[in-house]
Image (tube, rainbow, N blue to C red; front, side, top):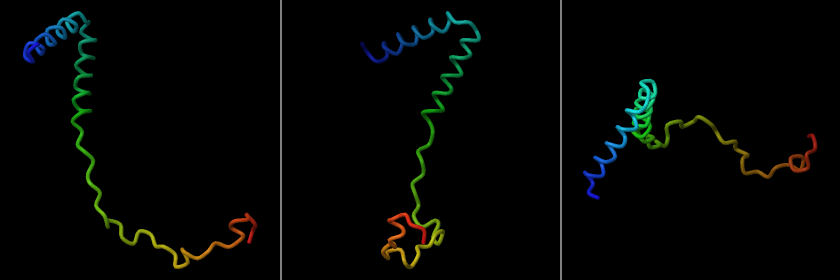
Length: 77
């Protein structure tokens, strides 16, 4: 089936289905179609920019030092 013919058949079938609905249901279909349009057209997330928060946290000078036995054994210091 040719693309244009397929689209026409889909259009006709959709119109028949929508015409059989109540006005409130037709409005719900319209609202849902608008929702789907918004859902698919959301912009892609922005790329990350490194270095925006320099100095937001500082690593301790003793970061690489071994942890005391109290840490591993669960004893209070």
